[in-house]
Image 1 (spheres, one colour):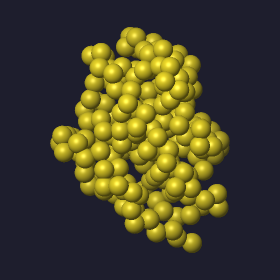
Image 2 (cartoon, helix red, strand yellow; image 1 turned 180 degrees about the vertical axis):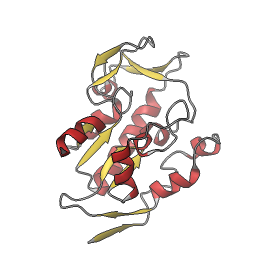
Image 3 (cartoon, helix red, strand yellow; image 1 turned 90 degrees about the vertical axis):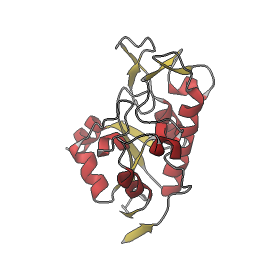
Image 4 (tube, helix red, strand yellow; image 1 turned 180 degrees about the horizontal axis):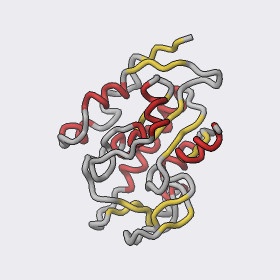
Length: 197
């Protein structure tokens, strides 16, 4: 049985500023993520996946972090690739950002901030994007999300420590926290592979 999805919401789902400011970003891929067909699984909707894992060039450095299995699921219409940072209005490329003073849960609670290497506070964009992505995931009936570890948005168990020195700490990103609050399970690509066996 097929569930045809004609539109995932607002035309600014990925942030029009992000698309118009960046030649690196493949606008065709963004359109494909907004307008596509998904096969209904027995658990409901598609998996939500970090867009960079599906091959989208949306990372802070303008690159992707493709994972063969995740990209395959997206190509088959079984996964919904989203980038919360683009949905929050951030451009590609953008300065790297880290959570200072806690993790994604603390950011959502207003007790921590997301700061770029240049010292710019981008907390509002991260929160806006995470909440928008979580709403889309809930509306689409996504049972779980496969996310990119270490990211200030998508980290599931580990994120950078906020010093921009390459050090890690335990904690989750802002999107991971927003999804968990909506009852959507979050795993990393490696863990998802192990569970499938």
